[in-house]
Image 1 (cartoon, rainbow, N blue to C red):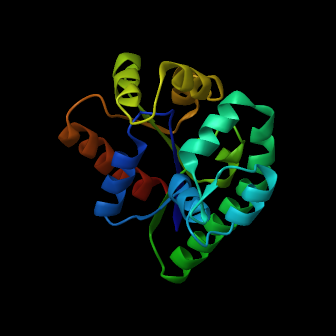
Image 2: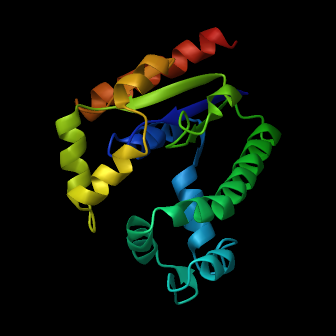
Length: 198
């Protein structure tokens, strides 16, 4: 099984590209979706986060907007949240890979936003970076509900610059053109991976 890491900064279109890989037959996994499951009612992270950061639980689930607001005001708490969440996300990722191998999948693509920042790239056969022009990225992100210029700047400050990610990538897929052009890039990457890892 070919295992590919998919990454890119906020607002670059990773979810769209991941769905294209899924539509073309790849097994896919998203770190953000894993976090959503952990934060949901009955999720494995709820009680620990509630104990570490009082006031961020609502109706038995982590209130992501409230948590984000608290972390924006007290960045030191972020390390506490990461210490709870990252091991649980890693377990979820390992279960996904185990199931994909058991199903004899040919290609598994894992969307990990902080792949380079956390040093995860060594665990993959190849890394794909999803990218778009800075003005398009900004427009997309600021159009999100609950997003502000301050929050966007804080997120960008924690992420490796797009230019550096592009340099470190095995493949770069641009999302600032048509969806058909982006899908063509995805198809080309799949074909090339098949040649590299027959």
